[in-house]
Length: 248
Ligand code: PEP
Image 1 (cartoon, protein in one colour):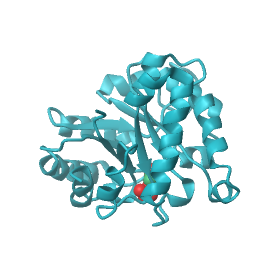
Image 2: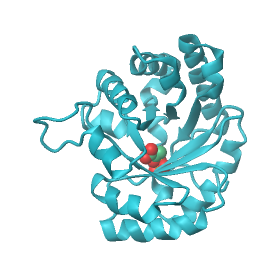
Image 3: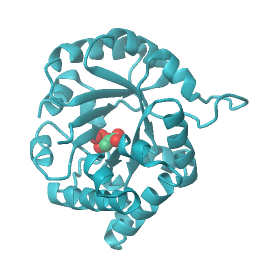
């Protein structure tokens, strides 16, 4: 049985004060949640969020990091800077990073390996564009993303990676993939993991759906055979909405 995992991605929202207020509200609302709960916030909020959420079931994640240990990389954050704070998760390869910040399958692979080296739990994002879905190349696109992301990654690390299937056309657009569409692609991702690592690893790896998940979509999505959770953008910004998703 795979434990569901619901993660919020706050993207570039909130001041530190605002973030702490939402976290404070959220921790009370989700304290009995059966799913793992994660908030992925802007770097500057992380120390305050770790402090606010200490001793609760809400874990803190970053939205990105560099793959190097340290050095002349102005504006970047190293993995050890995150673990030093008590950050447990990190989103790797979000489509917005791939689209606007030159994130490639190669840097995604390097960042995944850096996360494993430091004991950070990665949430690896994959997904196709609208053009790719319409051209019927979704499976090829995602096979390529998965194969490159997991290049030279050992099975025990792969098994502990959370994968988020996020069709780019469904992110922030209000267009959700149907539960069947999401489940079909997530099933294909599980098959890809099986091809790389065997059925045992594939049966354990948790795969989320992401793309305009809302309180009124989550129940049906979580009822699908292969969907193990959600990566939630817009609807994670308010504690009440997000808590409804967490407690689907
Ligand atoms: C996301 O940020 O990963 C996301 C899925 O956003 P939204 O839920 O707003 O579509």
